[in-house]
Image 1 (cartoon, rainbow, N blue to C red):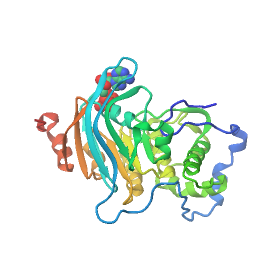
Image 2: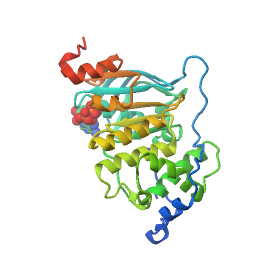
Image 3: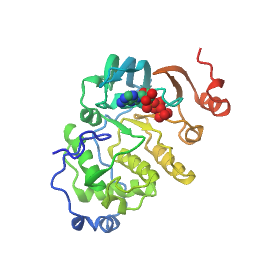
Amino acid sequence: MAVASFSPSFTVSPSPPIRPANRVSIQTRLRSIPRATLTIDSGSSGGVAAGKPKVLLEVRGLKAAVKENGKELLHGVDITIREGEVHAIMGKNGSGKSTFSKVLVGHPDYEVTDGSVVFKGENLLEKEPEERSHAGLFMSFQSPIEIPGVSNFEFMLMALNARREKNGLKPIEPLEFYGYLGPKLAALKMEPTFLDRNVNEGFSGGEKKRNEILQLAVLEADLAILDEVDSGLDVDALQDVASAVNGLLKPNNSILMITHYQRLLEIIHPSFVHIMEGGKIVKTGDSSLAKQLDEGGYKAISTV
Ligand SMILES: Nc1ncnc2c1ncn2[C@@H]1O[C@H](COP(=O)(O)OP(=O)(O)OP(=O)(O)O)[C@@H](O)[C@H]1O
């Protein structure tokens, strides 16, 4: 039985739940494993294209509506993201930023009514949410969900192994996974005790955000969509989370971030900044666009 019918990046169909008594020693085991950097292939595409970076995501004329009432929220979104690029989407409240990212990961509340989305050369819109995750798409939600009864450790191991299985790789054993997690936890300045706790249960807002980035680090997605990963973070936490995200950037993966603030873009430097308005991208520029916005508000940006 699925614990979460729709989770950020994967549906959880756990094997028998691990009782708290059986998982008390995760941090002890973590400490006993050498911190040698273990590399586990999560099944991402790998390889850097020679010459011009390959297109990872191509969205053309995307229109989408609320499934329940047919209200159209996206009115023709166009965006192209290549390997190695960081894209930021900014826009006033209610302009459609989160809807766009949720449509990309296949959120069940929305239906696509027109347009196309090609991810790594395949039609993304034909895929189920889980298949999108296995294909290398990851989304960090504005409000990460809690999953009672499933530890963080189990959740991430299941997610990684599900992706590996889909990509024809053999599963990672728990012990190897402990070693793999060590440096990632350290990069995010997270205590190993977080692995024992149920996914996001009782986590503070900032801890949830760190945990989302930990999941991203584990899955090594090709395209990470980060929806307001900076919201609710204190100054130090913002620095930790943004630096960890920077550490995950490779020549063959990309990031699409939604943010309201220039401060995040001062740490994670965007290749492109897009302004969304009324369910469409109305302007695209470089990081100077975010600066203009920060200094003069939306009125400082002419979208005509
Ligand atoms: N499931 C839904 N049912 C009805 N309306 C919805 C639904 N999802 C989104 N909307 C509406 O669509 C519009 C765009 O919402 P969205 O969350 O995408 O905006 P946003 O740009 O991310 O805003 P913010 O910056 O405040 O997070 C809003 O008016 C919102 O109320």
